[in-house]
Amino acid sequence: MTCLEAIRRDITTTLTSPSLKKEDIIPILQMDSKEEMQALQSLAMEVRKEQVGRVVYFRGLVEFSNVCRKNCFYCGLRRDNREVNRFRLDEEEILRAAAFAHENRYGSLVLQSGENQREEYIDFVCRIVRKIKSKYDLGITLSCGEQSRETYRRFFESGAHRYLLRVETSSPELYGKWHPDDGKHRFQTRLECLKSLKDTGFQTGSGSMVGVPFQTWGDIAGDILFLRDMEIDMMGIGPFVEHSETPFHRKDAACLIPREERLNVTLKTIAILRILLKDVNIASTTAMQALDRFGREKGLMFGANVIMPNLTPVSRRKDYLLYEGKPCLDEDALRCNNCLPVRIACVGDTIGYGERGDPLHYFRRVSRHSSDGD
Ligand code: 5AD
Ligand code: SF4
Ligand code: FES
Image 1 (cartoon, rainbow, N blue to C red):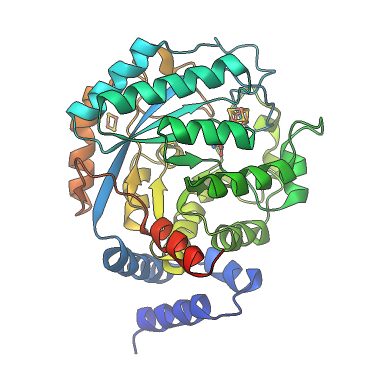
Image 2 (image 1 turned 180 degrees about the vertical axis):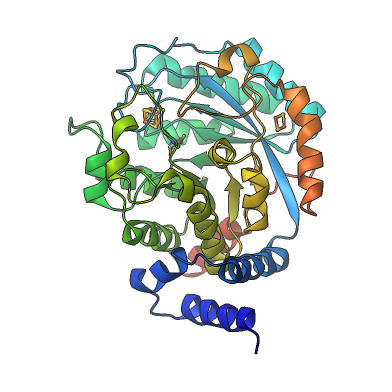
């Protein structure tokens, strides 16, 4: 048996064990040699090919408002960052982005914003979703933070069928260190929201960040098990990238995983999730490309199968900086639309033009629960 085969066998044995624990995952997250990376990558790609195919689905991303009521310590859009020009796109601007997605045969659109629970904002989201659905055959994903059960229901009834809400970290203690203790940032609320989203019927996306101050290897391993146990359908995992106008900018000393290692650890996390969860969708996130010119392509090579091309009007992109070094700030949708297919072809994948690319995990989860009488 070659060295590569032996490592592959060890990873498979570990990850298929019914009693898989955090402590078993940590050594895989810490794998570092060329052979180990190759073993993980080849296993993840085998599972990806077999379960979801070598097809990449596009979700056109429209960052439609940077107004946010929260104050997360890591994020450039936090309420206390007075350097941000707050904006909200108008209906026409969003519809133009939707038209672009439709004309270029992206199967879906993601509407993302900071967190806003005002009635007027919720009405606006419902209205725009209804309008897009009446004009175009596009799947709609919302990423609008924590809302009430009732609001989630209204979003769903307007025609959105997917929702992204990252848990950020599955550790309540760590969640407390990443957010102010002001009653507005509660881990428990995040969990309840994820549950509400699933109950409402959404294809539910969640995920976490890698390399944020105070995070340990055990925390990342815990995130993987959390996403499995919560039966999440879509994963968004990205490296932490500093933003100078946030409290976490000068917390280097508290970072156990230095910036240079964050992309690799993110790639290993993606590979483990693919091997473990099989039929989920996994995004190759933009933050990976902030750390490496080929970050997103590498994500695809470690098991991701979704890319979110940015359709936000170029004039607004510099006002939507969750972190610094975000790629394609000056490239309009057309430029990325020409660039991405080349990048994707380079890794040997094809693009699922005109396809929704819904996560198979969702359909299996729903049918499993209905046959359980759940
Ligand atoms: N680095 C990387 N990702 C970040 N996010 C917020 N701030 C940062 C940062 N500094 C992520 C969070 C959020 C998503 C929209 O962006 O995980 O859920
Ligand atoms: Fe607001 Fe989201 Fe940034 Fe937190 S991570 S400050 S909720 S935009
Ligand atoms: Fe935007 Fe290449 S992906 S220019």
